[in-house]
Image: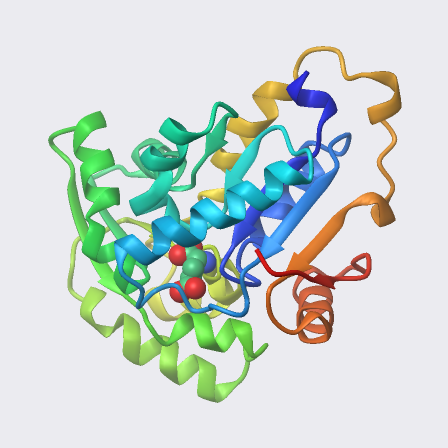
Length: 267
Ligand code: DGL
């Protein structure tokens, strides 16, 4: 029974917490086991081969923790490793690319969609491919934002310096026709206020986490087993491959809630 097992969620670091937040709200009966690969963050400059190998190690780790459904809460690995993982493992593995594209297609009025993401994700062309499979008439403009992940990983999500970096990075989107912008990296929702301020009211931001969470929640629609219906905050498990104190402190600030004790592991 997949819905009586924990949901395994992973990312390179803190970004996947933006997905965990939505899962906490929408699937409160599920226990979460989270792995942030903070020893190897950022993933954005990694090769597809490296990312497949990291995603494989982490999936293996999460399955060793008895997880049922795995959520790849990282666009960079979803872009290049999802097919590989789905072929290798029999458990359902849900990524963030296609859900984000579906949400953007529902949102756009003029068929011109922007996506901001890591270099690895942009290079893969995964959003473009997914969009054109669903609607060949769509125009997609992609922009890599390599400075954004370090800002979130160091907790610099507000202030003038961060605003200026966001403004400078998003400059190439000015003058384009996009009416919808996919936050194509799970770290970016933590910069969404500044992104909104820079791009203006006319462009709708899409956080793929909502659609990803809906897809995950489908597995929990059947009757939830009694013993699994009362998950307490301290029952969730959070692991990192780097510094657990750093993740604990910043994770709690970003999520605005206490996390159970974050533990260090080697995957
Ligand atoms: N949050 C991840 C993503 O969605 C990885 C970012 C990074 O480590 O560069 O792409």
